[in-house]
Image (cartoon, rainbow, N blue to C red; front, side, top):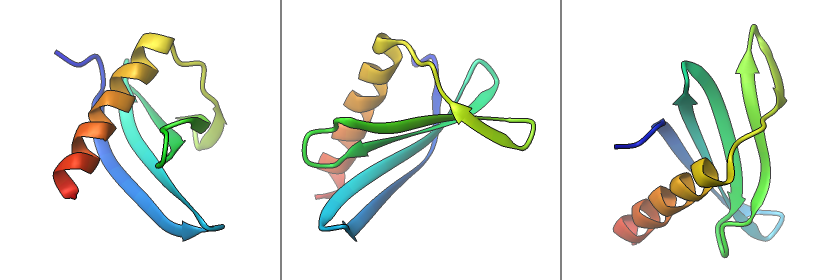
Length: 79
């Protein structure tokens, strides 16, 4: 059982000659987004959205790894 709910996944093609994947999700009733490089799923940034503002997110390594694995599966299924 996931501790988050993936709401949306956006793949940015041809952005500065790199591809990025942004995952929008909820965790503990808060909204987040995390952006990875598509090639190796290295984290580029992560944000928490709260009260109309965005703040850098402090996410656990286990949560990030779980999202990373979910994204790998979804990318593979789209290919």
